[in-house]
Length: 368
Ligand code: OSB
Ligand code: MG
Image 1: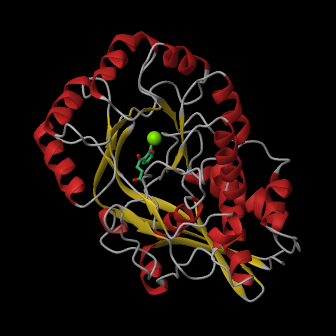
Image 2 (image 1 turned 30 degrees about the vertical axis):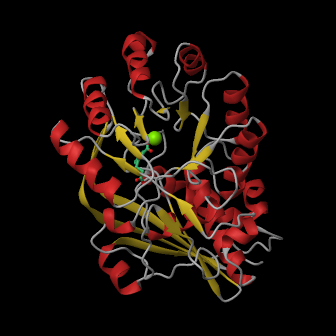
């Protein structure tokens, strides 16, 4: 498959409502949207990095600079045997997996389209629909949180994940657990605690949480292992896992017992599948996380989540929870807690070009 050209757009998309986590409040996303052109077809991917490095180190400006100056020049005009060749082409450059993932994921979409196959079939997934939960941001009150939980449970979501931060944790969870004794509940701290908070994290053991997501530092495995030893609840790693090697090391030292796989965070589909395989070899369940993606990233995530090890409900909930209007034409909506896998070739969604035009901040075209 020959990659002839690329288009890189930056679009801004307003969230329907603010999304608050321990690292800040998000009201919109600035999304780098990459199109790779080849074989008379187009492959799409979006970047999952934030505008500022609040989640991990990557950020939109850095990704754009790298794509232009380093990554796209390595793939444009190349004839590759499959998308599995893309990570090798980019491997001289360290880190920056979210930016690399954009190239790799767009190449997978293009390749699957060139074979007229849905992407999940090429990745090895077979499910027609994937189980999903929701990630609920920090609300104004416990009452508001209870109402939101109630609403999403009644919509059929199979798991409720609540964002927590110091001062918005044990009492909140006690209140939610009391109101919903049998709901599948989890919490996500986005790295806001340390081992000094052991008493508090141990207090969460009382609420039958399915797991506690990323309680400690974004770049830590060792303290997570020390914490896991002292908790009954499983730790789920998100920020800490950037590669299959990270996953292997984490599971080897029991730093967690669940992994949140974000295709964008680990460098693309090949790496995500390898993280999945490592987890399977340790008997550890995985689920597909999200970064408030538009329909392009969401469709990629859904394709990956069809692999057999994705046994826990993921975060890829209905697009209509995030946007008044999505940038793709196909609705990505859950039914009874299940997200149907798009049926078309590649990622299975098409762009709403007229709408994207109105959201565009900048656009550049690249040739070899
Ligand atoms: O930690 O999983 C996270 C959103 C932005 C950044 C990090 C995270 C999240 C979410 C929401 O939890 C996931 C989603 O609904 O797409
Ligand atoms: Mg998380």
